[in-house]
Length: 97
Image 1 (cartoon, rainbow, N blue to C red):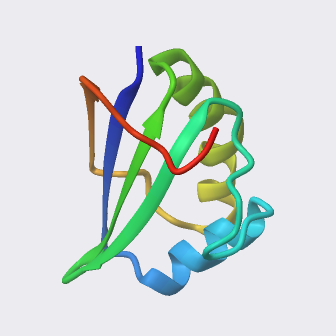
Image 2 (image 1 turned 30 degrees about the vertical axis):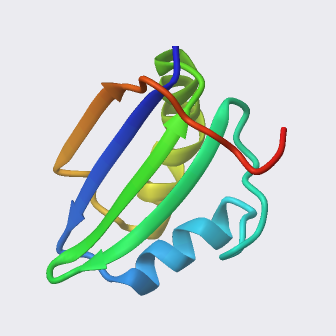
């Protein structure tokens, strides 16, 4: 079942987010590279940034977070998110498949 994963990062900058994305081989507006990731976006907040993803499963998110995101965060000095919220998706639509 698809899930929405929201992560809140504080005491960080949107520049650090951009560096994180670049270090993982992605670019703003470009395609995502994570198996199981259906959609991704990030927004700047007053004290950091929030990331929202739609994944095809919790397992896909957990594997990618453990193997790719966590090491990339450590490598560029971004603290782990202070809050992670996972919610089941009732429905989603895409422009293409």
